[in-house]
Image 1 (cartoon, helix red, strand yellow):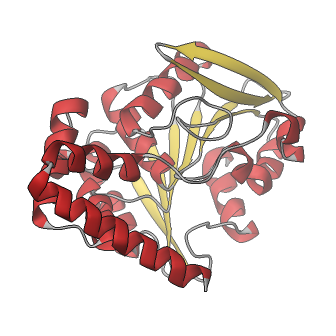
Image 2 (cartoon, rainbow, N blue to C red):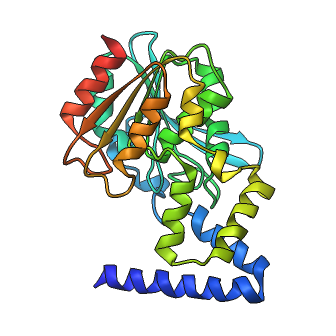
Length: 281
């Protein structure tokens, strides 16, 4: 019943935005972008953090008009790894993987993305997320970075736009390749018309300097010089399996891991063992 209600609400919202696109296009553009960029879940409550985050040293960092939250699990070696979660998630999604990283003695740093976890804001964008990452990378000089879903897309964007010599290996899990795919999924979910599609693309260009057809993981990956591991699940119903293949095919120094039965979350002891081996063996 809840799924049916969400479906009806999405279609009614889309119908309203479609009508506005003819009568009040500016408002239609604002509404379409608002529901596209604002996560509906993934927030955390400071006094009710998951146990894995309570174990970490926490820090709030101010950047421009934003603050973002970081969590650090101190290691016993000079090795450092940054973990980058995806859409409607937060740093606690790495609970299982953190147990593997601790075996390597690494210092582990996880970030709450814009409008997620304990970080500020209502709007999520990959460029802003990449700015958060750059602050940590410049300060900590990590050797490794791991990203899931849109966090993986952000890692690709980051290393292609802010190439950092400290990074030696990157891991991308369940990430969309083409921004056009993300937009098309949103358009389909709300059944938005061509007018709204045009308005959204104009908003991305005018406000974020993003040309949707050029904002591509393939393009980002093709510029990356460090080693990469791309993992994607055949049964991912959120991001098509082919998206991961496109990223790996464009990345000269990458290898691809195919999984089955994990869905989009990709939590698996077997997969995390393979990622551990890639990073540290």
